[in-house]
Amino acid sequence: MALDANATRCLLYAKTLGVSSARTAMLGRQRLVSSADTLQRTFTAFGYSLNKNEITEILSRGLGYAEPFLERLGATKIKSFDASDWENASDVSDFNLPIGEAFKNRFTAVIDGGTLEHIFNFPVAIANCMEMLEVGGHFVAITPANNFMGHGFYQFSPELFFGLFTAANGFNIVQIILFEHRPQPEWFEVRDPEAVRERVTVVNTRPTLLLVVARKVASVRVLGTPPQQTGYLAVWKAASTDAAPRVPSWALLKASEPRVTPSSPASVIGDERRAPSIVRRLRQRLFRLAPAPLQRAYVRLRNPQYRHYPYDPRFFRRIDIPPARRSE
Image (cartoon, rainbow, N blue to C red; front, side, top):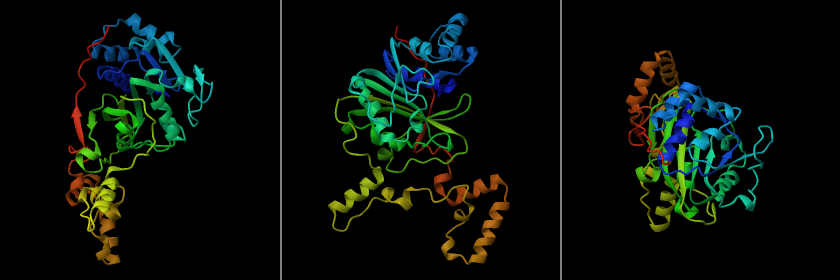
């Protein structure tokens, strides 16, 4: 569990969205993994003027952990929660189990820098995070999406968070951003599947992360009704209100789910149910033998959802991070 260059950038950006770090809860005791030069450039980009000595102090005083960095963001009280005392977290607490009453409605920020994917009982863990926040506080997560198989138990879809952080649970989404796990990645704001009336999907080849920022607006019982995917809700609603329902095409599985993936050549070469087996095998072999650029071009040609591969502008809006105006 660590805050690297991209994660520090995310947290500085979250501050520009109104996140207060005054009383912060960290899931896991996060390490700070950054060179002095990179950290100084990141602070400078967000309007902070820190000299080399101040940067060195941030990196050294916490013995490699993130508390000094969070203090620079305005944290005056920091708690860290872990199932083990291995990294000397301030509180040993297994988030597979409900959090104690003493920690509820207490924090201005709950930060997940890469912990939730390692907790098996995710519904309990996320409910803990939601209950720990005071009204007006923010949940901030830097969490894995695509191509992190084996890193933890889970990789997360944006729709999970759009479904969790709703008015029914006392929250609203401030912003969800998708970015690749590499130096200086592009950032893409993710649109709500309910708003675009399609499943927001991406098929890419790099490890990809989400930045999730959500604000608590009311103190209510969280997860009283589990989230459901919006496409299915539209189908069920249509079926319950019309004797001969006209189901929205965007809600149907076969209409909203990508028909193919680049890694499954058998499915990218047309309607195989109509092709004799010998023809099907020939098409598959020719596809496998083709150079990768030709394979990708063929996939895009036969499947409109890949024409903007991989970041379809219907779902993802490229954004530039504005400099922060730091609150003193």
